[in-house]
Image (cartoon, rainbow over all chains, first blue to last red; front, side, top):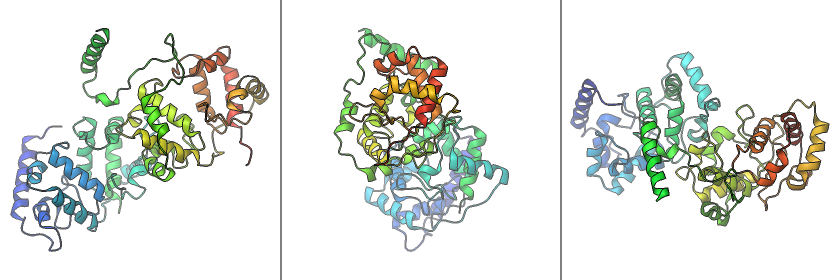
Length: 200
Length: 233
């Protein structure tokens, strides 16, 4: 999955917007969160669907991801420059603060896809040995420690992560997701992403 | 030298045929029952680490999260998919089978990517095994059609009970699995595979016993085992 030029330009434009907005942040957030607000929203509920919502994310998961961005274990042209100037203490503050923010409610999409998505999320697919998502991410999608919160997440972001996992480009963490993503069809992936996005 | 060449060949082969699949998902292949001089249950570093670990049930419950997406929260597995029932199984048996899968003595491409050390450490496997061991054995497991239970009982009493126990309780010290309450579908598949030497970590004794068995005899004894219940303590 390579960035097409228009998408890359959009990203750049959004980044610019983000930087312009950098001063506008929640008063109670750590100073480092100001730089995140432009893309991830002042309270961690991003409105741009390619940028993940961070509000209510599991602290353990978020901290690991931030550290992996910093070390390069999780590759991202967008995130890497932001990490360069942050200390481990900054990352910890950010993860802790975002974990405490109130997540925005989910968005319900196509009902037919939601039905399939829910079935897969709760039971997996035993024909292709795909485990139930709920066992690690919890029935309500709230996640657990190193397992990410997925409830209410943007469909576009989730789909992109599945693509990165399936192609082996996202290989940080325990690598459970690489195998899961590889075993799922495109339709299954979309259905699960829609279901996760719909969770309150 | 020969090993080195083999490694180079394997590496080249992996690049040539598998550009997408990550190498960690490819199960290694270790010597098994098909190999001359194979010793069943010979010591393994990974296994010794797990066995030496002072297992913690609570830690095991947390680590079991990555397993229960297939093996279910109560450990009951899934008959249709031939995911084994794990609740009440001996910890030693779970540890041995996990380590055999990791090392490539038990071939299982479906399970392998979830069994590696990138998912669970040897210590976590011991914790998970202790957690599963203390779960009650569900009675909702799949059973056969019940048509040949008399034959099943006769075969079990004659050939199986001396190792797996009168009630199917197995033997933790000897790494013999509990078979009572196991899914019929799973028992049947594993017995056939052991007979045909497809289960490469099977004990030679087990294979010797199963060798003369017909498919229908295996079905009968599997049906009988799936219905065994441990006596109330």
